[in-house]
Image (cartoon, rainbow, N blue to C red; front, side):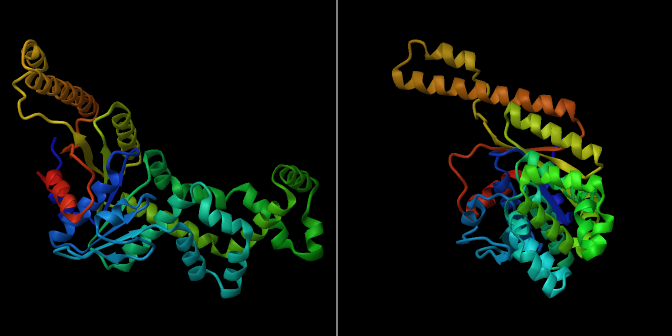
Length: 361
């Protein structure tokens, strides 16, 4: 089943590109965004990948948390890179009183959480996606996610956050802040003392105090976090959202793609199809590898070298075809589009246009 990319670009409101690392996911997202913009849609591409390839290919000296106009496009295209700390800071400033926000910003635990804790990046990506959609500025938002396992965290972030906010640890840490002063002494039980003593031995008293103060300061924002997390999760399941799984024609990458396709199906999220990047092709398929190797015997060195190179390329192409057929046999309802292997990296808009044309061919 073939994937009609142009139809997708003309109708989707959000396209989420996901896949394992090193498969050309960032390039695919950028190429889709360029093609959509030049087909008349106001488009923004958000990358979560820390590499700077996207900025370079679009002629931008840098990307940050603010959408920047891409020049040289026959249309409207903005690009940005997620700054998870700045996004978290924006949430705090929007939903907390000024004095409470200042207290949160100064907290050592918040400083660590907002810049380096596992899962924060994925949740902030969800927040930024929701902000972009709520602005109503763009017809299409293209999202470039981290590698597949992290992209699953992208899906799980709302549930993880809600579980954390409703968890026993948060309730315990809030007890001192809620009780306050002498009243606190009345609510502290032996069990709580045992718990905090055990945690203190593991992470240290100062860290526990930082965490407790942070949770207390953030308490008034918990409801907003839950609501936005659920709203963004619902947005990902909306018919206007489409997931594109990107893979290379390799065993591990296609196994990851299959895993992700199954997860999306289980979550009832809209999977548009699979993009197989860097596919090797040959223009002389009738000359089999066996025939080429036979012909190389006794030929002059240059001809023999060319024939052996052709034989290797045919074998690679056949191996890739078998791997793709294994995926399509297991997932016959998933549309597929292939992009041929390029001689070099994509580093400018013309390169992105060429990739976009292949995607749509």
